[in-house]
Length: 469
Ligand SMILES: [Zn+2]
Image (cartoon, rainbow, N blue to C red; front, top):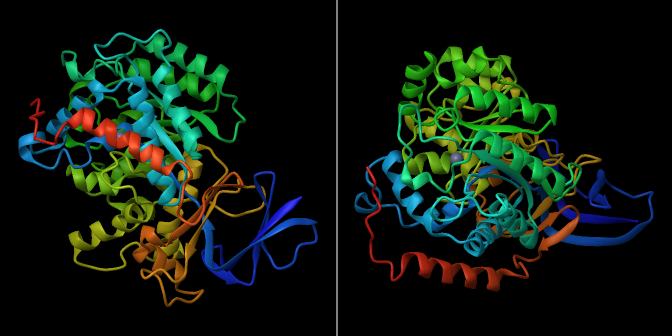
């Protein structure tokens, strides 16, 4: 038996239709844009005054970094750049016990759900106990993060990260001792996870994430990539986020990260290059030729001063851009989407730079980044409302101040450029309500536990110097 969701406006192919419904059965969309159902309908859900849209996909998240929000915005605390900011991040990472990892992940995932995100790709590299020894179960913290997602009701793709060294010609950084594993230990942990989480599950999926070419030498990266590809798992890696990282790669291998990955035949449709900010025309060509996805994280990249992705050149070559909340400086998928365009506007002193690339409208292009491109990067059938897709969707209140006064034809640009999180009313994952009228049933408990953790970590909030370099 199906459930028919009847909103005032229903998203369909880059626009909105009125008077149509969405039919959901057994967690899947059984028909999108139906005007009358021929199947027996068990229930009709009246969503008058609301629009129904696909849920967003957060392709790149480090949930524990939610704890340093507000703690890394001074030079005293975190220095002046990305490299010194890591000191604050390592300070937080060093102190978390398994319960804390669960509590902060639940807080980040709750905020994602309330921002309309229905699937998260969690790039997880916190593996060892404080002090650096592996836990008896080396997947303990991976499982805590998965359990947090299950508890909150968001779909998770656990991108378990390999972190094998500090960098080329660098001694081990004490701030990273909870991340380090050997290559074989990483693969045996992946194998153990695979046994526990079936590949066809709809709530938990796995992926493989060698952290970066700085943290994973080429030889080990090749072994890990081959392992992932045998199993058809998505492969994600930080690439070209910082110029210093490109320079170190050039010193070690005589090539920049993208050029090296291309030369070694490691890029591909299953590969997602996270950030890809400092890349030249030739490297963009390599990414395009190999059908690689780029995951951009603009709210984090502006927070860290990473730089601006040349989204017009990247998109102009037909490369898919997915989006991630990364450091959780903000959790707002549409803010990430609009920043792809806005950063270029400030830089070029022009407007509508990403409009009409491949004849696509600007709003549709940015909306695709927040939905279908993330879904393909994570290998999950979501991000649209087509028949057979996972029933992941959100509703927005058409009377919300940020979008009131709209028509079916301008709702998409209005939403992409102006929708405030306050407009998001309901969130459905796998056909199951997880947020109804902006309330999540576990919200009070999750926030209370997070506040306790925050107090434990940061005390009264007096600045503690955490800069390491
Ligand atoms: Zn990251």
